[in-house]
Length: 279
Image 1: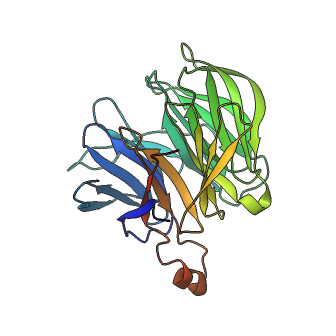
Image 2: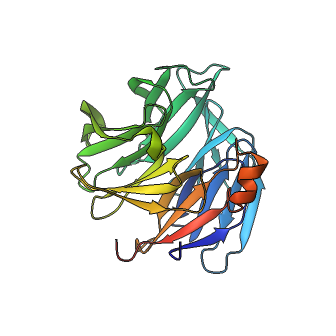
């Protein structure tokens, strides 16, 4: 564990959606059930926390620096020192549903998932929201849609279903956002945990965070080889790289852990930094 240090001892119930902000030069992430948006300077470790409506599923940064938020079933935008502005709602919005993970593609489209709060089987959706605000339903039949990422050549889209323990791959057309040829890229065993947040390095290795697995899986581009990077928390949730890919920032959760488990794993809910040099 000498590779792992603590960036923020935030004790989040469900830390999610880490984002290295290009305009703020800071690491952002959310505590979903608490409706908290955190911002930390990776050098000084000074943290600023803002309250917004919950459940706060994700953050994504617009080219202008505005932050897109997933709040319940709604897409919203937030600027510092201004109230949250709601933009639109998911086509399948319902009281039993909420948005989950999201990621911006290279063409400025926002891709996000919608999940049933009770995790009813095959009830989730994958959406793409065009820069003009039009929602498109891209795929269905997910149970807990999570990590989203693209290969460096933008020809493959990867989408995670945590409950099914699968990372799917699609052929991807950046020009129009078309996806096709869905297939299983990697399937985890129950003993390995549930794949959650996802990012991809410049070497095209996938980094999949394993909830209830105390690890990050580093998967080769062909999906045939995997390394496991151990973490001092049982429920890591998501990850992102620093600008040089020297470090991987990992959010984590305290939700659902017993007092005994929290005592055994006191860093649960913190944001961790993993030294990736040598991988």
